[in-house]
Image (tube, rainbow, N blue to C red; front, side, top):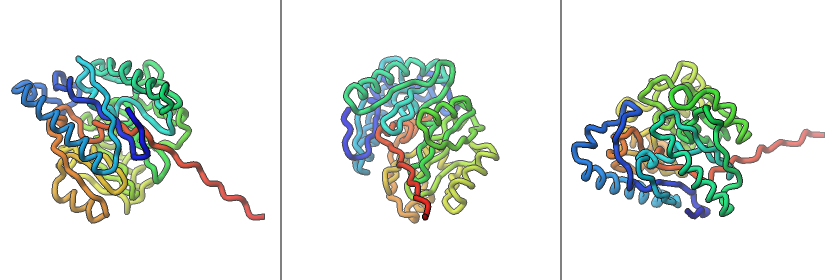
Length: 295
């Protein structure tokens, strides 16, 4: 892996990807099993298309090998929370994914050895938190939007906040269909947030409106959420997402974004989209500017 001045994203090769178990309502092992060879070919093509779209949007993409028996490693957003060259490695709630922890920890330790990260630690044993999928950095507001209630525990919030020493806005997820925040919430570079209201508690929806400002809220519709369009990658004014409905594309375009749709159907069979398939390695917070008091 090599980090450049461009936004740096990690993907995992889909060599070992398959849909062989069910840990969320979207997973369809039966559909995968109807023609595994064809689905593997389609997954390889979809991963390559996402890679190309991200690079066209201005990112540098590093590819980490996957591991046999760990098909969901292709979703590295869940591997860790990373900010300011500090990585906090996930603890997975589902036993099917816990084997990923050692592989990702080794990858981040390698980055640290090469001087590309400064600190690599892990959430305490028994405290479940599933990485950047439940801790979305908002560069404009300098805070994490942090999901909890499905996979990540509320107890993880204070650990995230203390480790990175930045503010955090908790958002409770109330639907098993939207088990990570990134499936239903997207923070955009212009200050807008795109989110799917049925995934959140009333308190969470009120928090989003209060912090983002109602003028910055874009409400995702059922078809956007079902198509994993909210699970998108924003790089500057570019948004890369699973193929969006024309209405959503038009709304984002009117707000000044360039939208690239990618066929990610093989990964939607497992409940993941563009954001799930990436992990941003180089996010940095900005120092607070304290104005001197007038004498």
